[in-house]
Length: 534
Image (cartoon, rainbow, N blue to C red; front, side):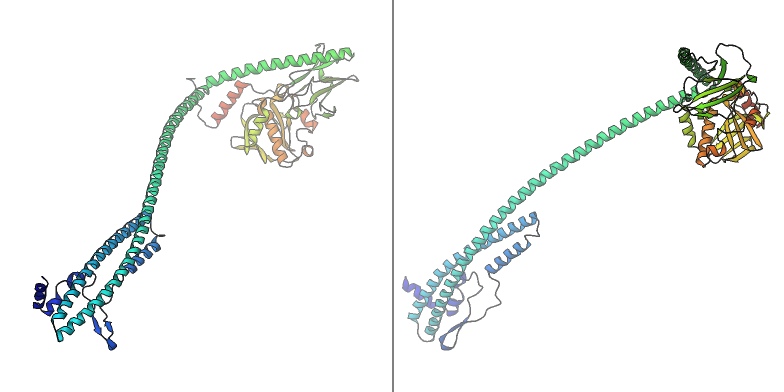
């Protein structure tokens, strides 16, 4: 066997020995054997090959550094993909190391076979061929040494690759765990978001239902308001209004009757007290002790007395201190209280034949119901108009058949008939205004107005409420203009001679006022509404 194989090897050419055969499978990592040459002093020098490719260790280290550098700025998904990619790369490298290790084992066998073949050839040849075989044997020895070193490096690389693969595997598992946690958190957030969306949808649906119910309720309320407005409109028809006025008048009459009974009881108590003191008055005051009424002086025993020869003077007395204040011009047996008398006692002093008698109210004058609120409401307007009739001009009686308008503004008062202005004057200390002193039944509804010295009016109002509100409103506006009461005799200090010229005047009743309005509208050319159907 050995000889035959030797003979067979001897028959082959030298090019076939080194160009083909068992040397080709050994070159797995490199494309060819390294090139060597004999240097000086018998040193073998390895010639430089083509530019070397970076080693496996450097590539893995670079890849790891890149992964660590990008770890902070990569998302979890990208990080997972990078880790999986690195893990796959490490697996491939590990397999490649295994393949290289297998190739090294195969190289050792091949080199041993090659060395044995060369040694057998060296013993059979001589001369130049023997030298070449010797050189080949030395090169095989050097290659074996290099392969052993390469094998050690591969073992080290294998250990490092294994370590890197383990760390990458651990990092991949951590990344998967982080991804699972993030996925769970994202799922939880998605569920929470879905719940929030459902709650918002429910709230919107509920809001829509509420708005629909509210809109329906608003429509119902609007219908009710329309029905109420129609009812109020029907109530404001002339016939309905007249019925309401009649009811109000009945209530007023009942209230007046109750007030009269109360005043009568107070007077009886006062008489009883004076009877015990043996001081019975000869005269008493009859009438409601309230604003808008009329007070009359009568004899206690109901005897008929002519007061034309009597000297009469009315006073107002403070509830506390009993301070008397004379009422200028009030010298007749009747007196209509003014707004200035509210809260004070009214006293009449009667003198006849050297004797003086006193008649006093049982209590302070009561205010009219709702008058203060009515005046406060009028104060918000820049001016207020009143329908009046002129009873006297400069003491001369006038026919009460024409309607006039008295305008009380913040700065002045004006009396006009249609477009014709009879008097217009600013508030000043020369202007005088008060209720009529005496004047018969006209006193509770009439005022005396003297805008300047040479001109004066006695004006009649429709109701006592309008008369008293006009007095209070003018007084308030005059005070706002810094016109004091005492400086001008406002409501209080008037010239007696002027007041004495005011005789008994008659105020038109309710139906006469309607006739006066109708006549004034016809005179102005205004078409009257037809209420025949009402």
